[in-house]
Picture 1 (cartoon, rainbow, N blue to C red):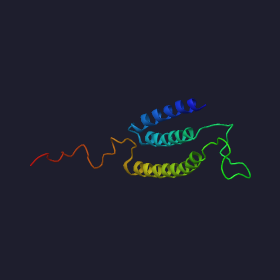
Picture 2 (cartoon, rainbow, N blue to C red; picture 1 turned 90 degrees about the vertical axis):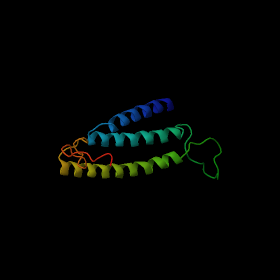
Picture 3 (cartoon, rainbow, N blue to C red; picture 1 turned 45 degrees about the vertical axis):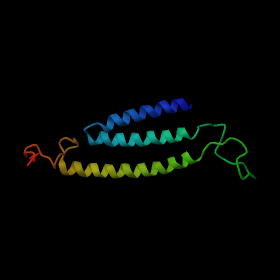
Picture 4 (tube, one colour; picture 1 turned 135 degrees about the vertical axis):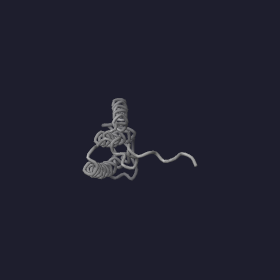
Length: 125
């Protein structure tokens, strides 16, 4: 089962990088969301996915008696989901504000600091 998740993580990372290299802000936002999911899947896969071995210590024991799954990646993923959702919401509001002010979601057209009709500054003195 773990090799399937490794391949799926690679596909997610590939799609995320492809979308992040786009010029459209909406595609970039989707790339950030998919990248977060890929990282979560990578952490989840590194925690040894096994149905036979739960991350639970039996009643009456202080330490595990046998092999157990690592619960730390699962806790990290829960935290990462909350953080990535809030980060995505912030980026979505930022993109909406940029679109409403500039009227486009193309990053090439958003170059307000370097307009096309202005000459570039001198390169030497």
